[in-house]
Image: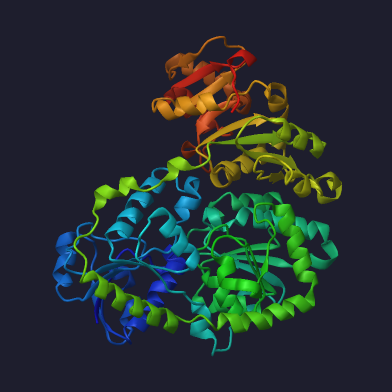
Length: 594
């Protein structure tokens, strides 16, 4: 079979190719042993593929139709392995296949702001609709694709642990001399710091672990590796500093493959609290090396790791994660068992198996393509389900002054609101917060989904709250709209808060940026953007009470992000100068709960 593969959009390793880069590199290498392969590749990756025998390498800088079309006459099948199908208009005489690694944007749409969700939805939908066959990397993803895009022709090809496949027969590097790190003295999380990787909660959990068990874990380190999407460029570096963890949490950034392999080989364990994985390549790497793994159960992870890895009970709760880590490390028999079972399970996956199953899928797709009449074009994309069906509202609830957790539980259970609750709770120090030990048990009794965020009381309240809100608005809120308020404010107005009407107004009127519930307003008032002296005066007044100003204000979640939310001066200035918002009266007569 003659296979034309398009890898033009593949990033370099240092740019953050990540697991997708490992998958594509290994697949091309092994497919070239089984079939005739031509690879369209950007010059930045030419040297990466140049050493592969029997591979016809073609350097190309763009995906224009005029560039790609001349090569289509040669192939039996055209393959795009990077969550896309390019160029947009492909001749139906050639069977086309696309790899969809995951549909994370449908699980966590608010992780994809600024038009990214809409772009992914449009392009993924077109690829799935137009392709004669779809390759995906787990049964979880296959089921998800079929649930959103019925009648898709989807094939599953499991991946492998590519570092282990490359270096397992070689002696690991001396990490003590290279990196001044002692074998067995650390746990490792090898992941680019995207939002779903859950670094923030892991760092919090590590802080709690070391404070609860100082004698056991005082010398334990957490190593964070990743590509040029540097952790040091994100608020995570701030929380590491705030929690005085600079000596314990090491940000190593991008490492050569052999060094990363060596660190995984010598690690006490690998932690993997990711909230979404289409497969989980590092998990297989660790299993192949006999390194015990503790991971979340989310999405495809339990499918790949089965009972050969340990699981966090709740990767959304850093306190529970700390308890899980403690029990994991204190059971030496379990660690040894996981090491042994992991090797056996890890060896079920290999890049050779990936290539073999991929080629088998190609052969089936080509056979079916010969019988098709036509293909679906871009106009059908709008018929698929989308982000508009997600839950409506999150309430970011400032509970920093709350001393009794039962008050929180009683208030939440008394609400007649259908929403997600994100309480910001004050831990201060681990020794002074025994009343929070039962929080998880109590919160499970609530009628609403609870996603707690913790404060550790290290800095002054305003600085720390800013850091917490950065994380909350960027990585925890998962609904279309969000409202901030304090516990006392919600307790005061809980019987007269209407969430249906504000959300409906925001749905109906695209010109509205927000809807503000006002107890001192008797009729709806539309507030226009300010300018000149009026803007300056309003800003000077409100900058001292910016969070108080945004209380009980319904905002569009897509307009909040890291460093840009109601806790920021920049956000307040932009809101006053460019936003049209509606003030709505708030009193019992205007309210009908649903």
